[in-house]
Length: 129
Image 1: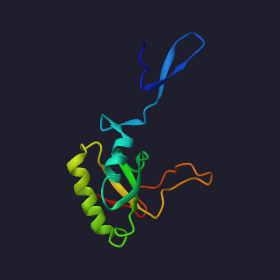
Image 2: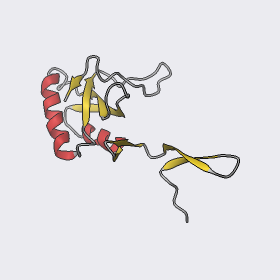
Image 3: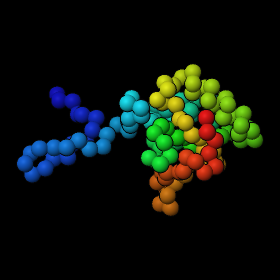
């Protein structure tokens, strides 16, 4: 049985294709394939994190990952301590390419008006790590 490639294949009328976006949610960061869901799971495994989202930075923000973190209630009172602990946690677990470089903290993950996951700025109000 043939294996499906990790990328979308965009076929044209001549029977030729171009490679499109990835199907598996992975992105290239610093020349390394990074699974965003794995990074999210590592962040969510921290005892102070209730939920998290991970995205590549926009081109004007940088060339690494950014994370939006929803702290657990007991951790939300000291975000600076949570950031230090979370950074140590992901430094011990993730490769350099997998480590988010910018963190934002909030009560809920950002969503569009229709309820779909939304992007967030890495710089404004972020905590750099």
